[in-house]
Length: 404
Image 1 (tube, helix red, strand yellow):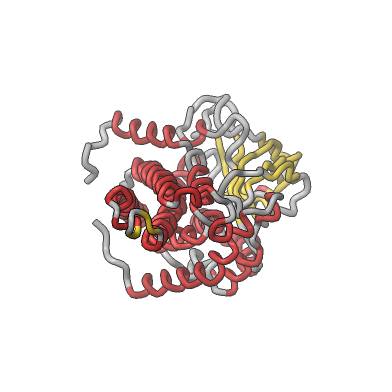
Image 2 (image 1 turned 90 degrees about the vertical axis):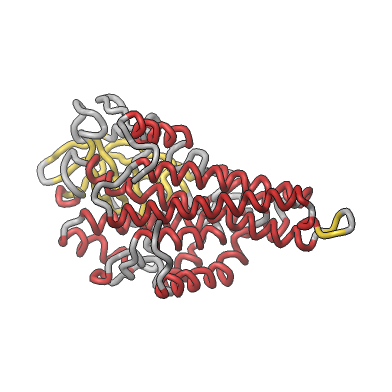
């Protein structure tokens, strides 16, 4: 279904795996348990990722990055999430938005906006699409004039003026550069009247209204951002006017694949923790890994992880190479990986018994944290049922039962 890892991919995977063990796992529980959500943000880890050359690894080599492809990126997203899903999501956002901007930006935009981000060891990115009444209508586009992202965009001479509020924005209060979806034709639907813009964080009129206090995935900040008559030059238009549907199709190819890889890392951590505990916990005169009830749970975790990883890898390979891409696949990835991770986290908590409920177990990074982290993706990056409906839409349109 897909090629085996190359030696270069294995080397890169092992580098990230070592980073997770040495840098992420020892501190993830400490950051997670901080009361103020803004204090959960791990600047130290981001700076170390920059030092290791990993923060900009999806930029092309021509722009000073590592030039890695989609399958390799998805693999690294999963590896980071084994240590902490929030760290993984921070970097998944950066990596996919790097790829989006490089694909769509002009040479002048790259020089003016992307290069300074590249050179900032704390440089992170965010994409601003979700609004109070524009979540699922963006994911499964309800293509009507009053639905989807409604951020007002007005022309004023050589500038665009952006007005509106975005919410749930990953990295929103930390990013130095935003990709913002604005409604440039309010008489048309969201698919035909929306445009992307590059908006620097220092632009006048950007207000961080609130940082969400999430139950899980706490190491990444999600924010409400208010744009109050934010003026940007017309040269900051990203892609084509009123053509965010085409531009977003590029983004949709891989965005949900990386989301799936993030939540799959939680399942891997759950299996690792549950297996280690089952080997040492003795009941009925033997380690509980010898009991069939426990073995069945571990087996289900492993089966789910391998199947989700295969689907993610197949989809990432297809997104990289296939012109006639099957847009049902990213939704399948997100739904399947989330279901696998949620079940694995709950089973790991059950295998641990009372310890599975304890916030202070394993330095605050035990099964209780994994359950909270996995549950975030029941809604993040589109709800499970919205993605199922996207798959159903493709089936209605004639998608074969077996993808070719």
